[in-house]
Length: 279
Image (cartoon, rainbow, N blue to C red):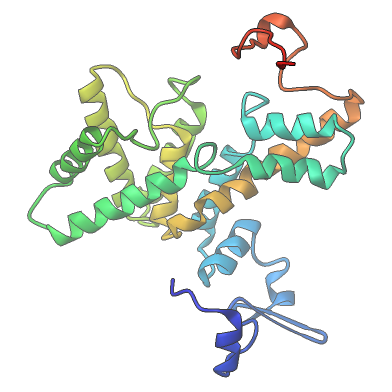
């Protein structure tokens, strides 16, 4: 994106804020061309999200699939840093919205960023496939996989610290495959994701499963959602769990619950031994 100062743009005759998303006037609210009163009661949350982000209304089946992604990522318990941070914030007596914001603000490239990374990988791989129609998906995936290995990068969207058969992945993959069979989605990105999983499994010589980030990435690619929006979409999904956990912790009435219990064996000092200033 070309960087220009707002004052320079305004001086050239553009509006201070210019948006193709919404047009708000007295007693009138237009979203992507649709009157809000027509959208209310006629489109789902996931259809509204897609309309705001991408400018069109998804079919009901595609919107249902996107909604399933949002539901699948809603909560993963206090093991997840975003949930733990929100709960810890709630014990510190700050406002509830600040507790929720604390959890949301933990989401980034490390925790919550794998979907975006996987989407970039799947989109770029699909571009290679389209540019080389004479080659198989498997051969192109193998080539890209070798680049990841040689650069020492972790392949995003595969493997999990806790799950080796994540029930969320199985269900989402099943629902997505149903839409492939019905012709609602093409299935190209699911095939690409599966090809990466197979190559990783072959290299590791052990069972490798796609994780929730990988299947969510493939599904969002099937829906032509921009990769750069993935962390925001995940924040909307995980935000539901963050709200629930922060509220539960708030009701518990416990104060100052740190990241670990107050036990000497859980916090280890590794600095210099005790010393004194020279007199």
